[in-house]
Picture 1 (spheres, rainbow, N blue to C red):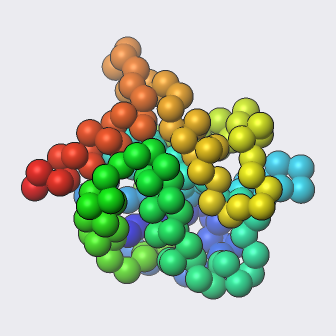
Picture 2 (picture 1 turned 45 degrees about the vertical axis):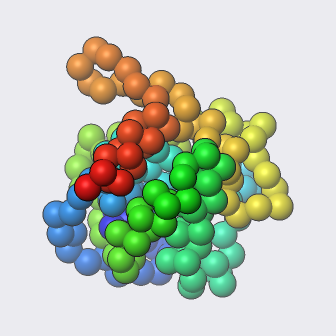
Amino acid sequence: MLIQCTKKLLDELKVTPVEAKETDSLLSWHANAMKIGRHKFLVLVNDKNRYAIVLYGLKAKDKKNIDHLLRKAIYEVFQSEAINEEVINEYLSLLSHLTFAKTKNRTLVARLNKQCENVLFAEKFLEIDSIVQVEMSKWISSLLAGDGKGSYFHPNEAMYKDLLELKDI
């Protein structure tokens, strides 16, 4: 699993980035840390389809166990989206060890920033008692996104399609 982080997030997690190797964009995510008022969020956005997963209120002990936490977040959000258990497990099995790298290009950073902006509008979905923000993630991923060619798509539907193709392989 390749997590391409902003400098802000790399500093927050206290990790040293490695050189990013080319990997399947479905297995790559961009991530950023943001703060709204006194609330801290970590936003993950899939490189292939812009599916977003939001984490809230990470503490120092959570940051030390970030690999497990990210897998748990993906599992919980996908499960709440009614994605087949086999498909979720297949996807998670493809996410070998966690690798942190610097962000790749401006287009993907712009997409990440757009999803971070959407977190601002999703405050009503905030679940204070939960690190994994399932409802917020689902809502953000259901918003229309432009493909840059004049048409639009829903990131959650694109993720379903990508995961189904993954199962067929």
